[in-house]
Image (cartoon, rainbow, N blue to C red; front, top):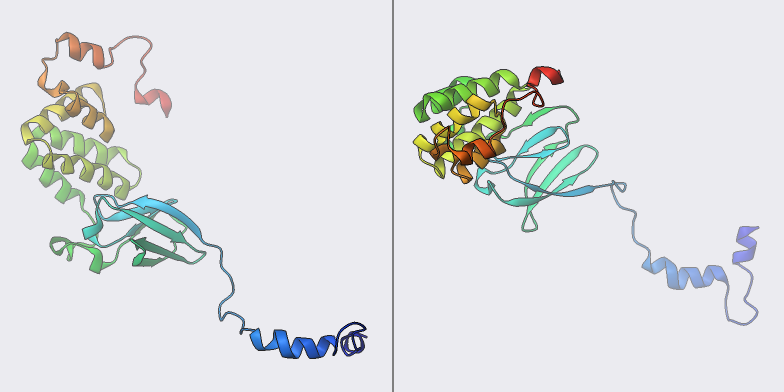
Length: 223
């Protein structure tokens, strides 16, 4: 029936549907794509100090020169692609579990032989900055459920030594240890507000730091 309809002559035009298809439509047809359409989620991400970006619960490496830059991440079903200034700079097999995917070529030279951060290295760096920095780092390493998550926090702290002298960083950690501040942004807040340079009984420090009273509970209350 379809063939018969397509071969019937038009009443008001010359030719048939089949003839018009063969002369107009068919020459313009293109072959089907080699690969089927695949949905892609696109997200802007920032490269962390450890030259990794996060997507869902996994971390993917990019060239270390891009630390601090914003990239465009394309997430497909089985592939993660990262673009900087419209140029692809990294690709990884997509992972759906917590962890890290690190390519050796993305590492700075001093890390090429170290595919993972180690607690020992972090503590050695912390010790060089001060005893209280070391205590803070040890606490973070002991608290975090996932090693890589702890390493990222510690690396963020150690990176602050580029902006602040070791003495100030150590004083900030001493203050944080005293008040059980174990979040990186709390250390940054102490340094930015110069709380580390105030005496412990100064009005400014007493005002900005939490006081001990019945309305403040420790971490044991939230387990």
